[in-house]
Image 1 (cartoon, rainbow, N blue to C red):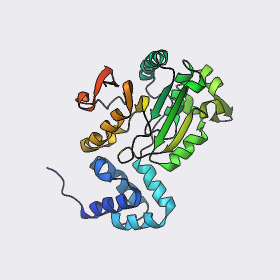
Image 2: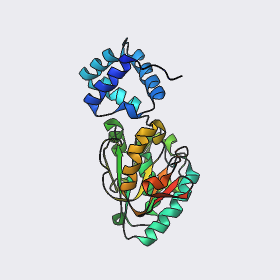
Image 3: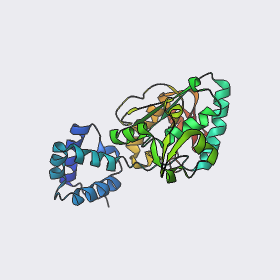
Length: 261
């Protein structure tokens, strides 16, 4: 039986949309409400509406809330066997096209975008590719642009990759400038903002699982519309697209889809 709507949470969603432009209707209700309930209780608010008015008055509380909403779980070369498949596809794209434009959507703290640079540098000179890396959360984008990570975050990288692309300072590793110059980080709401360009490759992994089916139906056409013909979309391991042909996509490999026209 479907749970009755909570007027307090419904009002919070409407107010939050007006304040931030983020429509929580398109996020899976049970997951999002549980996550926000925990945070609200931790900060000592007895209702969602009271919590909202506190968010309205405090940038610190608002940023904390936005960070909770956007999950931000990532790592370099997450699920590396899938990245090995991506590398094969990148080698083919690089052989066919003189320049590659790549979109790292919902890039979080930047590990995915920098992983893409490492792969692309194997097949193209720096001037022949560019990565647009976007996220809804300004705080994580700031961390991504700084490119500073604990050494443990680099566990999936080879020793050669660490030496080539990072500078180690004690327990911290910083991305070298040669990596940063190939990426532009900026804010983008997957649900409501237009795609930031036209791309040969879009990587959008481990974020679609948090959206409702209605939310996905808003996002899939945007991703497809931003791909050039025969361009490639790479999604997460639990994010199979049912009926991809509805979005002018065709299955290419497991978790990969090609633009048909």
